[in-house]
Image (cartoon, rainbow, N blue to C red):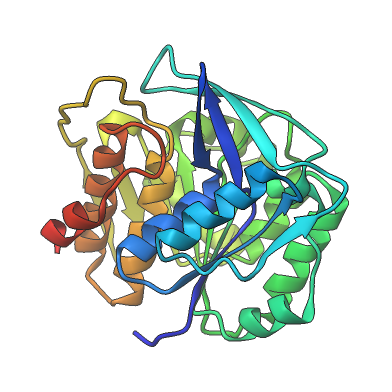
Length: 299
């Protein structure tokens, strides 16, 4: 593994849970967790020219994330999301529109870092507006051929369209899909099978030339499929701290996948790290808990 950066491009925001707010955003979570694995990581995102934006940027910077590519928007505010954790294992989100990361701009600084990227993680939500969707396209065009690209489907209704999903799949080296999304996804793509497993993974790989397909089942575990390997792991029993929720568990899973594949670990070991990382985050409060010591124990 070399020292080029891992890039997450997309949301940076505050999760508002009752009277509390917590640093979050799927791609911000991924680069935070990647940094805790010891991977040099940078976030491509945008915040408002306000106190909430500065606090978010400082929070990530203090935890080792390269924040030099977080842009400041003078017109749109820093993003906030209302989170309902009344069901801790299945939180729900109200995602407000017209926020700073809807207006990400492709710049020479972003282009240079994209040329040097070792891995890139992206999702669907940040593609909901033309500006950020076009910027993602430019980044995907700029990354080197050997860049590991992870597309996390992570559907947040109503912010997705089939053409965005198809374009993202054609750009991905790994795709991760939660079991809750597979039926909708398969129907949208016109696949004859919608159950998460070997047949759906084969259809995805063959239609979009994706080497690795992962399915996650929440507390019930996960699976990984390549041309040569098929790995299915059960869930990890957890002892949640008081007030724990599953927010960010899937993003921790993504970061561990990136770590494992960049370090050329066997698929079963990589999936095991991702499974355990996600379970641990689901046992904690918020999407960016202290995890560095736990990750070291896994290694």
